[in-house]
Length: 425
Ligand SMILES: *Cc1c(COP(=O)(O)O)cnc(C)c1O
Image (cartoon, rainbow, N blue to C red; front, top):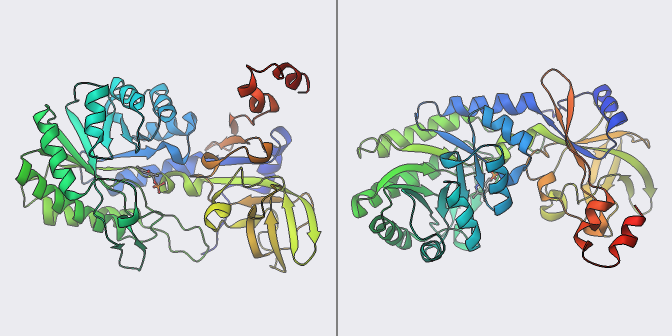
């Protein structure tokens, strides 16, 4: 399948006149349409809610768009909770799915009445010690261990993952929570990341539904929701077959009718915490080719680096690249596309066939809408880029300015050298 940018060269040139590259750009239309499709896919379940994984794209403007489409927020840290609260996503519109959680984050989450998802059995004690009383609704994260295999060969090893509780611990946890006044229970599990198959959610759902039936029978706890978490993938490579969320929703419905309904549990709500699937394809990193270097290999140096998009450097992840204006040009050159970090893994592409690139060409790096800007960092003193939102009517809006040296130096403000540093900027 061809991968095509969601905007044009002319539009990008217009934006660049105002906001220099590099920047991440997001497609509001794509985000909204996709969010509506997700809602439709699970509309058979009256309690369904998608809690967008804030960590995937922590920008309040994007969160607000998703909120308008009915999504809640799934947070994993204090600042993510603060952001959710700031857009008015308090109470059961916010899920707190953290791990190795600092005590004060539980206090904050509890104060805003977020639904708390305990990652570990020992967190019951931490919670009791710091917060005191338990809320009426709580969730526990489950880790089945072993190897989880999806039909198309995608595999992950929950047995090696640091998350969740064993089944034994989960049963015990529910009993303890119940005796402490908790009335509504949820079960959560996250087993596979970036699953590009329609079978992952249905298989995970079946496993969790069967567990839920056992737990309810055994402990008498009232299970009110099953949280399928994130992990639904996107087609990063041109040949990848995209997930069909409608088929995924149907698959979950089948498992629901097979397992939960006969057990008298037809009132259980389905929750999801997708990040990547919600925004991944609707973001791109826009960067300019600034150097060409020919040694043993041919390099194109761009003005973005791994600090703007870490996935290729960190996981060897593939991100498709379109040279704007050369969408239909023959792929005549083999390039490594690199950033300027003093790190040899700072490469957006290795041995990539691309059209001949001239200095000044705009490169559009696809699928950076989730875990893109969000994983940014400041190594080599690099500054984080701006973020731009492309509205449905074609207008654009800066939804985060680029960092400046003063942002970078701000954490030195208590040192005498700070004034000198600031006099340089
Ligand atoms: C990362 C994460 C998500 C989102 O994962 P995606 O792969 O982006 O869908 C959801 N829930 C939890 C607890 C996570 O850690």
